[in-house]
Amino acid sequence: MTVIRLLTVFCLLTIVNSESANQRQHATVAEVEEYIEKTKQNINPRYRLHYHVAPPVGWMNDPNGFSYYKGEYHIFYQFYPYDSVWGPMHWGHSSSPDLVNWKTLPTALVPGDVQCFSGSAVVDGDTLTLMYTAHEITDSEPYYNETQFLAYSDDGINFRNYEGNPVLPAAPNGSPDFRDPKVWRHGDFWYVVIGSKTSDERGRVLLYRSSDLKDWDFLTVIGESTGDMGYMWECPDFFELNGKHILLMSPQGINPEGDRYKNTYQTGYIIGTFNYDTYEFVQEVQFQEMDYGHDFYATQTTDLDGKRYVIAWFGMWEVPHPEEADGWAGALTLIRELSLVGDRIIMKPVESMISLREEKLLDGEFQAGEVINFEKTGEIIVEGDLENKIELLLEGREGGGKVWLKWDPDVEKVIVDRGSGDIRQVEWSPLDSKSWRIFLDASSIELFCGEGEVVFSSRVFPEGGWKLTNQSPQILNITLYKLKRSVPA
Ligand SMILES: *[C@@H]1O[C@H](CO)[C@@H](O)[C@H](O)[C@H]1NC(C)=O
Ligand SMILES: *[C@@H]1O[C@H](CO)[C@@H](O)[C@H](O)[C@H]1NC(C)=O
Image 1: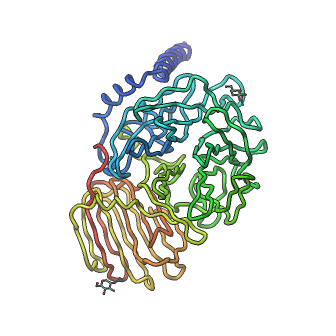
Image 2: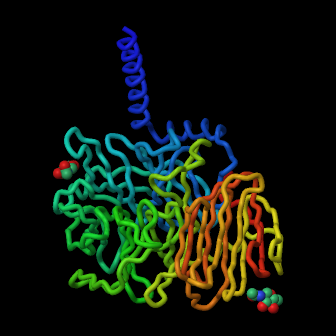
Image 3: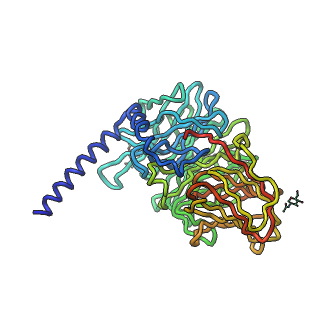
């Protein structure tokens, strides 16, 4: 009796929930925006970031559609407004004149019969065209289908789906994993790379070509795991950098190996040369990780005036997201400018980050044992003697998360240690500059070593502003700036 009654209640609840979920999945942009406005007030601000793009409410993962259109940079992102955990995907949207100051625009894509998974944006004449993966739930194994859709905008704010969707209905081998199109223009054609897998579960990247973004010809498999490089390659990107070609992607299923591949999934790149006549990508330098921190995935690049910029999801799958309790989750990294030096990509914070510097809180010697407290944001430039150990502790003034940044001269490694063995580390041999540049936000740290040879991006959750302690056995030279807010509160 009790069991039956409980079951009835459970079934009713399930029906009510799935009805509202269904309404939500078919909500208009205006309805979504109304919900966001109403819900925003309930967010707990303690971990909200001051100069990183984050969702106004709800969940964010991959950056999408990174582009420059009518005088503004645009970044979109995988977005679920109704909860701070993953749900049916929308595209959130922000724009910026300078890659540093961001404003929030209305949600660009809302799901209907299909969810709006990751993709990219290109400017075609006066139109901003999005190409994205339509993820459809189906009735039979594997219960989903992925095809590629187009959407158009003439103002960079309002988007409409192309009536001839899908423009790419299936992968050449019929794999249901067929997603994350990244489009670019070369000569007279559009090209797109799409992430997929072989029938025996090896990650691969497919290359197509089109003259109008609608009719696509499959050209080749531009890269494929030979077995130890994962079962799925997500978020591919392909571009020229300092005379070489870079295949950047996010493989899933690489096993940890010493200091490497310690995150749930990886993001990295292969360097080679590409021939647009034969479509042959000759690999020259094997896969290397792009960033060595705890929270960096699903990169996307764009270029303007000869500069190549990258952004990533400042997060990771299957790890705790403490801000979930506050009504939001996930963020995007700082924009970094890329260059190729020898067999490595180096990443520097975009130049305009300097415009966020406010008062200088410290400039000079920072004694062993010395402590300085500051608010939720800071840029710290650190110089030390690399013959000796460096150890900086960053922690919450009122407790919470902490992180040690260390240099161990015996093994020549930089170490980012969140405590309890939660360590990321890598060898660093400075190209030129021997200083560190650290960006702290309310719940994040980005460490750029030297010219950007080695970068760590990790989320950390301190309570009540930051406290910096020099635990090194040496005096360090430190410059510390407070940074201004550059995203909506
Ligand atoms: C996915 O749907 C398209 C039609 O939109 C169809 O052509 C394709 O075969 C389907 N793929 C799979 C794997 O079922
Ligand atoms: C710190 O600054 C002082 C004064 O400019 C300089 O003499 C010293 O070499 C610097 N130390 C390091 C480790 O860069």
